[in-house]
Image (cartoon, rainbow, N blue to C red; front, side, top):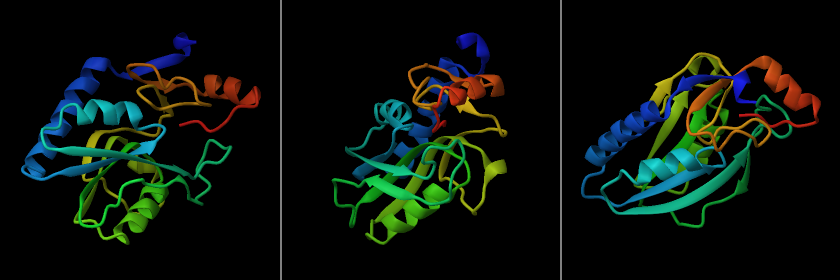
Length: 188
């Protein structure tokens, strides 16, 4: 199946970019405790690598949201499937995402979390795809800006597959079609 994938970012490129992002975050939050919130499921690999490079006290939590349902494109309707366990009021919160596409999910999630009155709320993503944006949204920390490719690996999936790959790959259309004809969906 890997022959249908084209490498976009290698393990080494990802490792270097994560370290670079962590250095920025370390400077910005020096002397502060940080609540790092991963957006499940895609951000878990990136978040694990990121927090291992952070030098301040870190609390970890997760939120699960859905805007895709059983489709490969966002419906625009965002639902929180798993809310935070931690209270964020008065805390510095870093929301970690795998990829920003339309921006709808993050805009909704940020608005929801801002209402809980954190001391600060910033967003860190490993990939940003601004050509697909439906709402104005710019991450505070961004690893790579990419064109409109369907990507998998490093936590990103197609029908729950490929998350375990250590690099990020472009998943070609014919492979997406094969997955979907088997009744699978929810890619990326």
